[in-house]
Length: 333
Image (cartoon, rainbow, N blue to C red; front, top):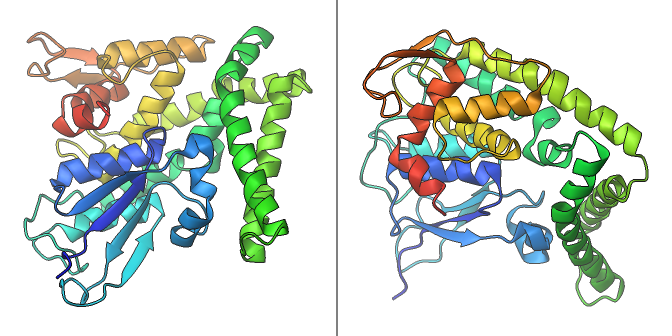
């Protein structure tokens, strides 16, 4: 008799939205008996492999594959569905482990809800998530444009070019196998491969110095206009210390993972205290950009040494997230 099927999370330690999903798993208390974790090596193009595209046709990491209701016994063939949209995936994980779960999971241990409790909070949560999940400030775009002069562009290329070339090699290999009829894939899949190859080749031209001035113009606009605007808006929308106040919610998981990526690009670390992390980010942005320090942090905050202090809302948010077991576990990977 086979074992009862479990959900499988396909993720990458190098994926920002994978980290947001892991935060949701840990916050909700899912165990190894409920969800298997399988790493997808996105640096080698595994997310574009034929096997993974059968699960996630748009090559999205993370992807959660879950058994459907009516197929959760060990004596029948299981049916599955895949959830790839990060927002929908995290909401699914939240609702699947609740007292009123109707999402057909194996969990029998309800956990506190991460969903906003009111329509007003739901709108505020969606607003922040939509801001940081826009293509304009996507993690890949932020990383690609994280050079502000010729020297830093050359240095950035040393770390990114090998990864880009490895991905291109994998995709060219899949296309070649199709041409040789070693594998058969749909025209839609082949179009996805060709489009991704074109994106990679465009990125490689940036690092070869084919159009340095145009690249630096884009990176300058990103870091001196776009990011300050986004951070200012998010900082203003935050109630504090979490997005919606004293209780952690879905929006915190998205924002925490995205903000951690920004801090790392600025040379910081996920376990820096809030003031250090945000001030490092402000310095990286430059041009005198500073977030208003208008949030009175609790005296019980482990980073304030028993004193209530004023800090930016994002710094207080960072401290609140950094103190959570889910954060320590996710970033210890």
